[in-house]
Length: 365
Length: 258
Image (cartoon, rainbow over all chains, first blue to last red; front, side, top):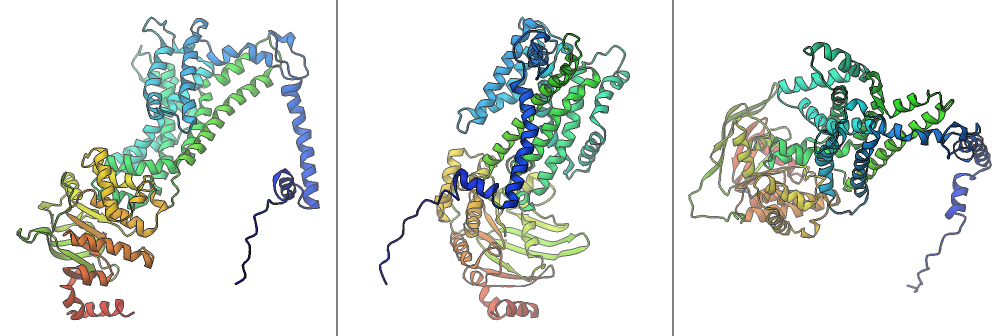
């Protein structure tokens, strides 16, 4: 055989890779596509330039009252001036530091979760689930350790939104898991109770649950029983969301092949150990998108607490925009509220995608 | 630790480790096991064959209570299987099982698959469990795969991991439910070799399989089942060369024809 030299790998021409290649392949691959691309770019230009102009270039950022705002662009001065109210609600100004401490703690726990190889991650996770809620509860409520008591009707704004969603998320997941297991139980009594519970809560709108909790419940309780309004709302939200969570998780449990249950049983693992070590880790991983979906829905549903007179972040915004000192700022207010919700929901969504990738073990059964 | 494999011991009196007395089982209306009587001595290697739907898998799955029998008596290692969960878990600790589809836990690495049950059921310390795990991985000749996930292994390797996983619990009895029938032909041999080596250590084994070569070399007894009954049982030479029953003859002629 003739001795041939192996030809070296050459770099591809710039017409198929890099920015030029990308443009050619995606935007200008044919005359018709070129026309469509240009039309598209024009629409983007027409729609977005005014929005960008309103929100950034012509917007007013600095000042203390409405005079600082021209009518050209957005009046972010308003949002800046009322920021304290949006974040802390009616919480006493002198006690803002307590909420700030909690925000710092929260950030200190969340940031390491984003970093692949941060140390003590597992301990931080447990602290997040157990220590953090206790510390936050003490700080927010006060009344011990020389902290002034702050009644929950003074809570509001972003802080209240976060409290409700945090409690809802932390409580709804475990209760949902138990309900899902219960609904698949072989014991008829447990199965019927769990099914009834799920179907009952899933069958009513959240708004009516909250309404019942605040208006109807006191009627059934003995005279003079004072049941905290926030607590009632929290219980309502947790019950409601755990019913949804249960169904999401049940979907995951049903997707696990029977062989996994059998293999766990054959090794001598009992029910709880099979579930905890073999079935749930797989089932929960499968339904991460559904779980996060429920979390996001829960986060946004917290706005409904306005029905029982609690001031979540959206409600603080809508009460601030009717302030006569600030006419015509409703667009800015609602854009701000929407932005706050979007930031939190989008972060949850990104985190879940990250988690899915991390837990992927390169297998398909 | 008592993790040394049981050695073949000819001096000790032969002890019956599994007894099935007049066992019946129904799936709804379907009478799947009809009056099964079976006695397995310690160290005995039994191959169970028969056409599909004959109840052979169901029978061995009754031995570790993956299936419940409705009538009759099953005694494993001196403990009778009843609804008592304690007895069931006690028996499952002593009875290893390998499945047709391996059923490894896909979210755990190979080594974690091996150490899970020793750590959580036998309460073996983690380091010791890993040592035992590696020992058995070496025995099935894939120690280099310890940190991989099951999905990254070939079928034959997965089944060998599954065998090692059962052995880590130091079982007295091993059940095999068609361990090679989901494998590509070139992988069947590596699994069978592992099973032959296991048989040589004196392990009590019940294998549902159609690998007649394995039955001839390893089995002490071959059992033929059809329609929920044990039709014929005999030592392998007699069984293959001189089947007594008509249905056995038909079955053997079908599977040995090619």
